[in-house]
Image (cartoon, rainbow, N blue to C red; front, side, top):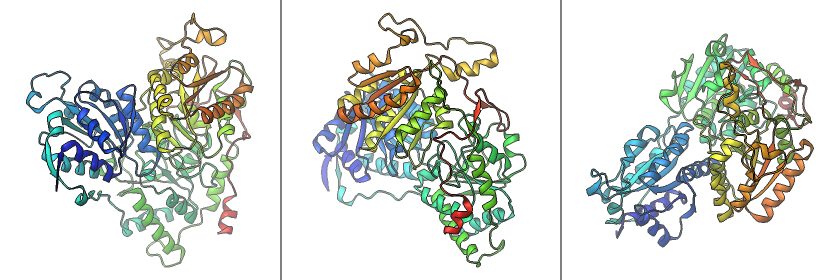
Length: 603
């Protein structure tokens, strides 16, 4: 046993638990922890410009790679309250981040001391655990429990609040015998897998809805294997995008009332059995439930028991980690393929159904090749697909930019579409992209924002400049709160949603758009350029990548759009409003690599 300050034990535990990437701001009440980090030397720290930004950086870092847990640091007063939005975004999307706050001394916690707030009570609704530690001897056990909780069941964030005197109190601690606790994860049984296969055997048009739980389980390869073994098409959710490549013959397209593709909705409406795997039945995915549920049965597999039946009661529900469920389903399906199955016997051949979905995928697209000036947003996504290829990682949060991006961009790898799905906080994109870039060093990370999302936490660009964290930020600027403006159409108004003004310091077409994003980005130590001609978007993206590689800082590409564009969406899957002219297959559409029957023959 070694005698040390409680914060020195904390740093050793962070290292042993593999959580060595931190983001935050030092301050009086958290300085003891910073002193321990400085002495230890093995904890990487990125100084944020805003504490909410630090929490989004930790979130982005967690999402960048399986097993990551980002850590955000600050004091418990305004720093802690600033991090609540980050904790909410992480909790909503099942992401484990650890928030550590420094607190006033124990003796003054009820005396309205300077910057003392009951941050644990504030954070409880958006964390798996939020605790103010009053006894230094409890610090190791609280952290050990926190890491187990973050990784158990549905992953999520934890907040640990440490009074400054607790941080500095000496305790006896032996890191050599400290062991991380094994996380608890439910697993589907063979009987449950057989029941699901029985339901599949009765279906004509089964469809798998692949949610973010598959990414959390690091099970994308098993999803693809199960789909190929059974010839069942797969539709990823917004959070599960990338679990199966866009150009795989069994990728049937995203379903939804906002973030979706036309062929995805069309195939879903032809399905008769839907197997939800690691998903929540989010309302932007389902739309009107009477349309979504009509004429089809549902299986729901999720790691969180309270998710089963939360939105609607499935025909069959299973509480299981997505990876464990796929293991059980693969084992059962292999047995049936070998002729040794029970109950329902061998599975039907769904190749014809899969080929129907592939055929839709080859034709039902929206037009993107516009040449208009000002630029139509659809053209931007066409050029992004061409410029960045299959290895790019996209980061986005909310707005028409994100919705159009999900309709028109292409994703080919797990964890290459990183999105704040349920919470969708404006300002998340930039700091999250910095966290993603820290988690994917050397890879191409591209953030996608509308002008308002970009402005919310624009100061965090300086973090990338200071710490040499390169990423490319595409800002589609229509100087409007575009999604809110579009939703105001139902109220016959366009009220308080314009961001435009005549900027006395700017010239050219962008002057009337208000904020000069290029000037701001340059002032924060980054590189930036502006594009106003659709034929120059590709060249702008190419130059931006060169600048990013040369200078190792964030590079902003601002594209000046037409002020008003309505993006396709609706209230139900069968009634999407199409505002733009529809097109046949664009040149950059990810058609299937090979028809399903040829894939089966090759196997």
